[in-house]
Image: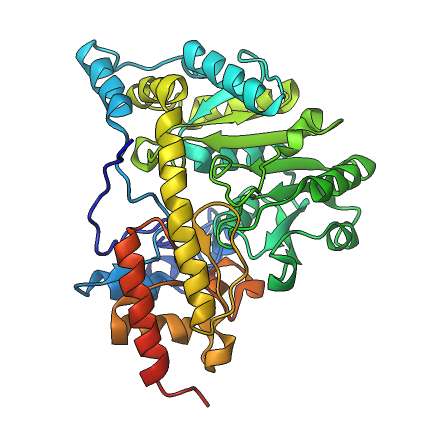
Length: 428
C-alpha cells in the first residue's frame, strides 16, 4: 500500500537541542540564599550536571542553510497513515477533548496488552501494569524517577540514545557507560556489563533496536543479560520504541518475555517510529504492579494524562495499522541496504544495521574527528549527519545517518559524500 511521505529537504528541530543554564550564566550570577549566603547558581545541581547538547551548534548551522539533505533528524519522513489521523479527527468531532483517566483509555490499554501478548507472548494487566504516556520520553522519565535513589548507578550502553544518560542524572542517579564496538555490531556484551556492576548498581537501561547504531540484541545475549540481572537483583528499563523496525532476518525479543524478567522489567514502547506518529506524543509503559504504582504517582501529578485525541488515534493504529507498519518497514529496508552498502563502497566502514533506521559508519579513516567531519560535510556539500560523540564517548569517530528519508535523497547524499571525500584535504 502506498505511504505518503513528507518532501523534507532539511529539518532544524532536534530533541537534543536544549537550552541548559550552567553555573556561569548571567541569571545565575550573584544568587543569594535564604539567609544571605551566596550561591553559584539558581539552577539545581542535578540539572547543571546534565551536559548541554553536544550538537546544538551543529543544528544551528543547519537552520541557517538552504538545500540541505538531512540524514540527521531521527523521525519518519512518512506522514501518519490517513485512517489513524482520521480517528483523531473523529475524536475531536465527537467532543473527545477532555482528560482521560490518568492511566489512559482502558480500551487502548486493553488493545495494546492484547497486541503485545499475541506478538511476544508476554501478558500485561491493562489495569495494574500498563500506562499510556506522553511519548516514550515521558515513560523513560517516569521509570527513572520511580526506581532511582540518589547515587544509584544505572548501566547504559555507550553509544546510546542521547536522552538515556540525562534521564538518569535528572533522577539523581549516576549513569555507568559500558562501551560497545563496531566489531561486535555495537551489541552490549554481557561480560562487560557484569564487570561494571558495583554495590551501588540499581538497574540496567537497554535501548534496542538501537538509536544511534541500528544494533539488535539476539536472544542468547538477552538471556545472558537476564541471568546477570537476576543474579545481581538489578531492575531493567527497556526502551523498545523501534521494536517493529528490524530487518534482514533479525528478530526483536523483549527482555520481559524471558523467564524471571517480567517482574523486574519496565518496558517502554509506542507508535512514533513504527506508525509515523512522532507529533502525536502517545506511547505506553508496562511494569510490574509496584513499579507501575510509582510511575503512575509521578505521571498523575506531572502530566495528568496523555493527549486524549492522540489516544484515539493510537487505538486505530493498534487495530488497523499493521499494513502500514509492514509497508513502511519494507521501504526502510530498501533504504537501509542502499545506505550501509553505499558507505562501505565509499570506504567508510559501516556495520550492518539490523534495526531502527540509522547507520553508524566510521569516519576515522578520513583523518577527521566526527564533529569536524560532520561540520565540513554540511558546509561543503550540504549533507547533515550527526557526530557519533553526541551519543557517548564510544561513538567518537563515527557519525549517525538516518535513512528515514527518500531513496532518491539518500542516493544524492551518497554522491555528495563521495564528492566530499575526493575533494576534501585529509586532516593532519
